Length: 113
Length: 130
Image (cartoon, rainbow over all chains, first blue to last red; front, side):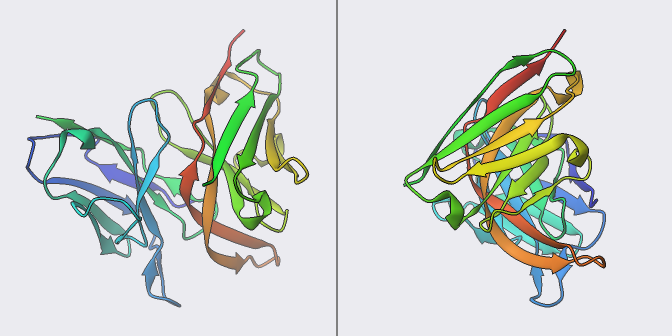
C-alpha cells in the first residue's frame, strides 16, 4: 500500500494568514501516461463527512473558494489556504488514488491562533 | 440532486456482523461506482471496498476476508457486511460516490479501479462492545 504522511499533525494560524499543509507519499503518484498526479485533498468539519476540495493535486472542485490551492508532484504535495477564514477550521486529509487500495493521510488539524 | 440515506445496526458485540445499507435517491446507482469508507473515532479514513457501475466489487486486502458489498438495483441500494467484528472495527462508516480515474490490470489479469470521492453520505456510527 502507498503510505500517505501529512505534516504537521496540527496547525494554528491567525485569521487572514496563510496556512500550509504538507502531504508525502511513500511512492510517486505521478502517472506518466497522462502526466497527472493522483492526489486529492479533503476538508472535514466536526460531525460531518469529508468534503472534496482538490483533485489531480491542483484542480479545485466546483464551489470550493479560490483561497484553497494545491500544488506539488511525484511524492510531495501541499495544500495552501491563502487567507484563513474562521470557517476553515477543520481537519484536512490527502488521498492517493494511484493504486488500489486508495489510502489517506492521517489528517492535519487546523485551528485559529 | 443525488441524496443518500444510510442505516444499520449501531451497537454490536464482538464476533457479530456489521450490516449497513446506503440508499441512493435522485440518480441511478449503476451510473457510478460506490465505496464504503470508515473512520475510527478521532482517527483517519480507511477505504473498505467498492461496487462499481458494472456491479463488480473490489475490497481492501486488509479486510477482504471479512467484507461483502452487494447491490440491489431494484431498490437503488447497496450494502456492506463485515463479519467477525472486534472493538477495532468501531468507526463511523460512510458510503461515498467515486469518480473513476483509471483502470489498471495486475499481473494475474485482475482489474482495479481507482477513485477520489466527490460525494459522501452522512455516516453511521458502529460501536463494537461486549
